[in-house]
Image (cartoon, rainbow, N blue to C red; front, top):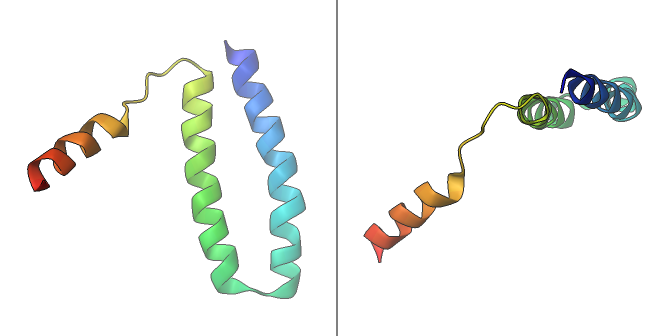
Length: 70
């Protein structure tokens, strides 16, 4: 179970290095900020999922909201 978590960390580290370093070199602050926030959110969710934490489904809540609107 924790081996999957380690694998997620390694994969995200490799992707982060290859994507974030060029953004820092080009000094694209807005793009770097947005990318980093989305990347961090994806990492946290994927890491939690890989170690077995149950993540609630957002589709059930969206269906309820949409049904109330319609």
